[in-house]
Length: 338
Length: 300
Image (cartoon, rainbow over all chains, first blue to last red; front, top):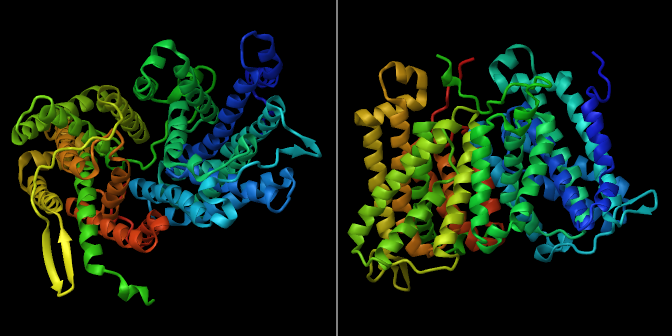
């Protein structure tokens, strides 16, 4: 079944509005446009990771607590390729994605035998190990000091130094990757993912090749994180192992659950929401006086969102416009069936 | 491989056991909550930390004697756990399992923030429950193995708690009800088990275990809101290594992880966690349900 590129006029409108964001921001007085755009870029980069993570968790039902590790691999790959080896950014970006996808494929191998908390632990260990390995290979990665003064992203000789130029780059990438994710989800592969999520045994019985699709899910998810890593490295132009902690992996997980598991738009909504939240809180006058209360409120918002929108923000939003896949039950509770 | 023989193995293993018993103790709470409610909690370390702060307040501000403060803290934690279940988890568990996990992460953030808000972020010493010279084991004329009394107490408490909990789940009616609820909620309810109350009890006991953990770890690691960060991750790893539903597994996994940590930390401190987790992955690929865990049989 063929579908148009933008099946809903609303989503086309949304994309157009997003494309006009930089000039629109400039009109509103009193807004630090550069900083806001930088934050939006960061949120969109995290949204790319969330898109990939949602393919893995929300669709294929595999767990990961190590996506900051993938982001780090993509960031370091891109940084080293452009800075040390003089690769053009446009080549380093997909290369970072592919390298990370290869690592994702390897991490998918233990997932063939593990599930639930066991798989979570393996991915957590992966996420913890990457920063240590970065420190260990200091001569290549700059060690604890990190890599500074990374070359700015350039497209066909045009250097993207301003925030709004970079915004358009990130914007194009995320539009492309969103469409790609949506197509994957609606394809043969996506249906295989969902079948594995809902019941591995039933999927296998229907002829779904578990080895192939589980490793595909990991590689695909890692590819997204790798591309995001490359964009991250050239946005901040400084990377160090401290930028890729387990906390960040947990944040990615939070983004997709708050946004909506098994929902492409939910990944983006969740990433924008969770990146904006601390920034807004940090500016609220009441919370500014009690710095530590900020974490309390953040945790409380997290809990309340889950309690009142169990299908995520996107689930609450789009039930009336378009049916979304049922909420995922990763690490399914087989016992539930009497 | 010359370094293999030059390592001070005896002391490294003793240090590893001392460290590992902290992991094992924290892992108990994680295993207990997983066993009874099917939720993998990321708030166990923070529950322990918060209870340790309560104990600190009782000891330091109100000048209560240690046993009284200990019991009061346990009661507090029991209540806190039950409230967490009643207010948060019962609702969260209606969604996917990931929803419950995120709620425990939110709980951890709230607890850390509250502790920081109430008591501040500075590192404080926590009174030692035991004082006295460390135990020395003479292995050769030139070498003594050292084990502090606190480590010995922690190890003893860990083993006693393991036996008690093991017996509780094996023989007591409530323990069996908890296992039944974890195995199949619907069937348990049909058998007349008050599922909600059992879940609340599971969280209460889990939090109380956390309180014991906190009060024993705080003297070693000092008291501050993030004191459980590393311990909680290793405890989780230990619990999974041993098999997430097995209490003896939590002890075996925790101690093993402590020893790996101690040896790897001596030989290659910068790769300590990487080595520990690489070994873990190897073990899990060979035994996917952990060392002592039982493989779940899945229904379609």
